[in-house]
Image 1 (cartoon, rainbow, N blue to C red):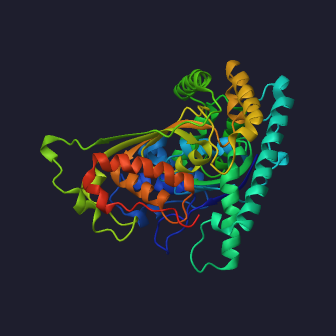
Image 2: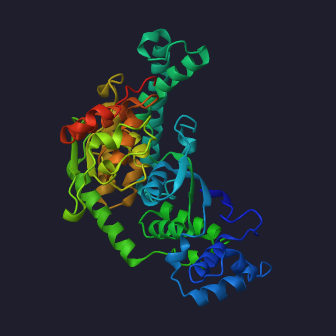
Image 3: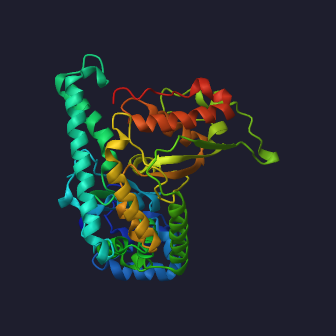
Length: 448
């Protein structure tokens, strides 16, 4: 694991004002809130040759807590190379206010050379060889199914949906993606990937504190690397990024819950799709909603259009019983509201094009290793999971954000399994909010 870069977004000041460091910007804006002098006058008093003294002087005067000014630091961008897919997922779960990107499975190396060592991720020493051998078999299954499906997509072109009048290069790419998107369920969650996130110092401090409070050695190593890098830009604020008793207590309780639930539900059988949707339209009696849902939605030209108060104020919770980790990794990135999963293996998903029975021995071996790690109470059980492991996943947000996600994940170019999941939950939403049905655009995920 390594951090490959750090970039600071320029402060939001007029072009003729001096540029300042993120921490100086935060302190100046804190001072700005306690003054009627204007930003230019405050900056004139700043000694840019000695910014640390200016920061200390301002913060001492303003007497703000670190959290209240940490969000004023602008965007601090950190790129983490060679972290596991599990840690990438966890970062997006924790950093709910961040903008970020992760390397696509279509572009990273899919073999044993792209795994961390067992020691790096806390696999018990006596299970290390067994874990490594299992990962090798999983990559082999992925490669074999990818090659088979890629050949089928070429020999049976009608098998793959392609847009009309597509150029040959586009057709080739779509056929390869057809194979990858179905074979990817054998990819280990331990596979290395790369992640870049942009967020304020305040949110970074919370993210690093959370990582430092987890039981996973990889998470704590990442916390240390990120802290050391950000201390160069925001040293006063990043001092508040160490493990915290409340974070540790909750992380331990969530791990215990996952272990208990995981051992009870551990299975390699494919689960039947089930969804749960709860819509809450209640509002205070002195502020009742008067806008019809139709008026909130009908003026949009596409999913990026602005919705009205009828959907912006409507609370929506939705969940699946069987979200494969392959899909969880992306749906977990929708930032609004709260997302939760115990990250267990309550079943295993393989698409129709792959026969489950052909790989049952591999899945049984993988499940047994997962069971062994869970029985030992090891947080490292997550690294024995493959992307086809099915886990419950819950997301709570507001209707406008839910509708955007449903339209995006069923729209053109959406992954076939995203479309299945979001179509199911959208149908249930429309049963509870029937007046939205004619104004929410459910796509067909064409082309893949």
